[in-house]
Length: 326
Image 1 (tube, rainbow, N blue to C red):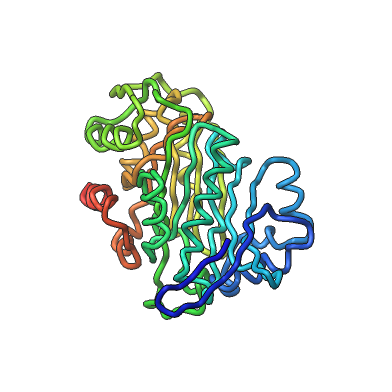
Image 2: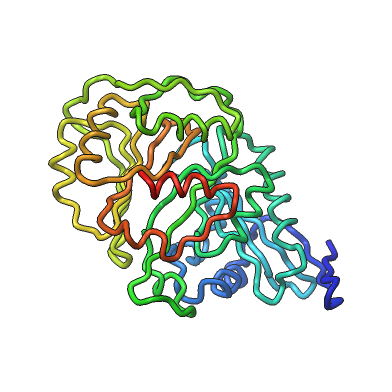
């Protein structure tokens, strides 16, 4: 497909195709054109890793290849993550020299066509919030801002080639597009966040029934966790909140700590009250997954820094204002 910059007259012919064995070096060069050495998921660069994931159906990786054979843009959808039924869009990069031609828009269109053929409950993306460009592209393709992953990354490590205020940390916007789900069913939701949560589901075009209580907690919690020592952050996905939750929270020492709490689960109310009592703040929701409907709750210790590198595209500004005003 031929792309043209009307201002400069520059042209570029690109073929969009799935990742192939042998693309590893060009793929890495494309990613590092944006992140430098800061991209955290180094396993994607290992020989055979992405080819194996694509062959198994766990990932879809697309490459934009110029006539010269150079990979000039990439994007991917991961289907084997923490939220079954919800494909995670990632690796959305266009080389600097190829920007301004509309390559990113076309890449996204092709990616969404592939995703539609695959199906699923939803698509989502965790988009870095220091730049609105990716957010805007997703908005135009039917995505909705549903939450915030605050300050999980040290800015100087994630994007080392940029100038940052000392100690700056980067956040991600959680953006979602509805797939096959039309009704999320009955969920626990604390009364103080009911209107905001209903508004999010309404923007997604999904019915939901919110209640103020949940079943008592079981004895033990079921938590999937990921700790990143380099960035001083930890993420919990709480699929079942048991009576041991408080004891387990006592052991967390990371600077940035984010919990996903399943609002369908037993003990959801008790867990919310435990987290809120420890200073955790409402940070939105991660909706439309096969394994639950999740509320995002972020440790408030770094809250004064949440907006330091935060830039949100216009349609989602209301939710950021709500989160910061809670």
